Amino acid sequence: MNANCPFLFYTERRLVLLTGRRARTLAELAGHLREVTGSSVFYHTHHHYLSHHFERPRFYNDFATWALQALQETALAERLAVIDLLAFTAIRPLREAIAAAIDARVKEEGRDERRCPPGDEFHFCESQSFIMPTGIVADGVADFFRKLPRVSNVSLFFHFFEARLRLGRPTNDFSSWLAGCGEPELARAIDSLDPYITTLDELKQQIIRIGGER
Image 1 (cartoon, rainbow, N blue to C red):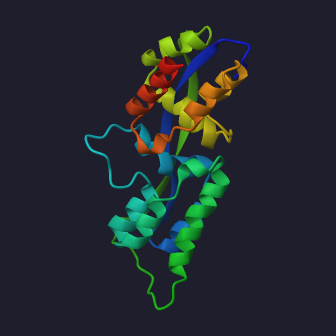
Image 2: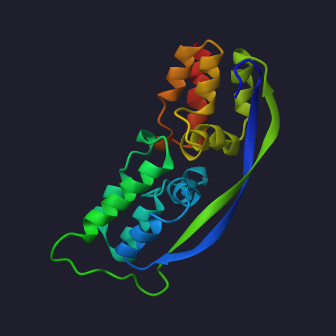
Image 3: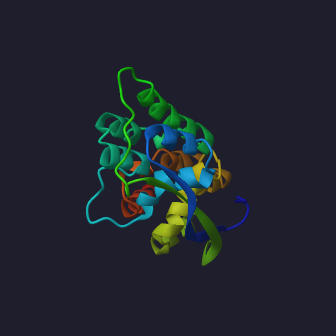
């Protein structure tokens, strides 16, 4: 994003692919986790945030859900679910945090290795993204907040989630652009939002409200 230029809103189309890797035990899960692509790790920790839910799922993290449902590992599932995704700005340390939690459970003494029932294996997927412009362009800060209500949740997800973690940037695209436009307070206010505790609709309204107050 060049702060001297208008803000171009982008969106994406995602193709989800099976990697051919599957896990039946926690040891296998940790082993594959350290070898799959960053796209796979991002997919299994984030795709539920882009999905529409009539009610919020217990866990957004696929690894936590599988540990609970396939292996009845309640304590581990809760440990995986509370990993603070907002604390990470790159996939590699997130991958290691998840794998370390699984390793710790595997190494516990006096514990037999559990194997999931046939058909309940964890299948690793990854997503391939195709990025394209939405046609929505903001000609300045005020225009940015006027046009944000027209932006889709997919576009919001790309600029707020993908840009920060999957693309390894220290902040979201909105805050980065606003800071470059001479609006550091607006940038910090938006960057302080936690997108992992709200829906995308709620996140958008929070950003719009911050702009309105400014």
